[in-house]
Image (cartoon, rainbow, N blue to C red; front, side, top):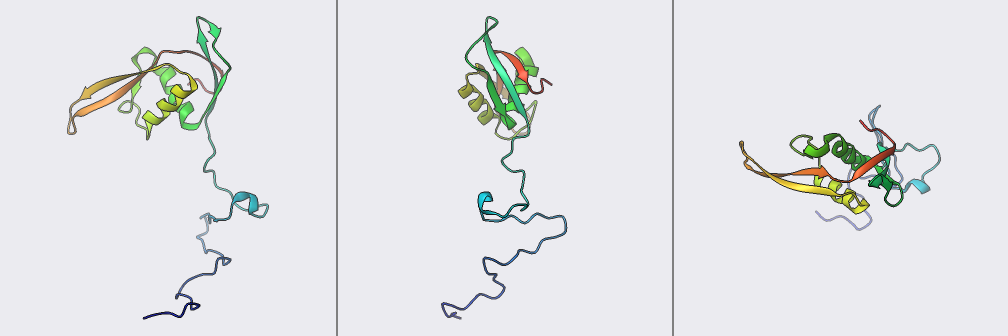
Length: 144
């Protein structure tokens, strides 16, 4: 059955109609935040919750400027610092996109070694273990 070009589909809403929500549910808008009215609900997406400010050291002397690391990158750096010389892998500390966090930390200037380890089990193969070789002083943020 064909509809006339100006005929609306059954159950369709106009772009300005409100979206019904459950009592504790947030309605997301396609309107950019800077165009929404003041007091409109916001989501926490895109906001880094973890923040670390660190300084890479070379023989005890600062190497470059201090670095601020945010979100999951800060989490990965904290785990690398805690792991010390043994390093860590996603088998030890499961997390999505671990390799990407390491890639981003390397872009900041951290010296991080990747060691390939074999593993058996139901799905044998290999995984990476990451070891931080840079000396790092934590200026702000959580060390543990």
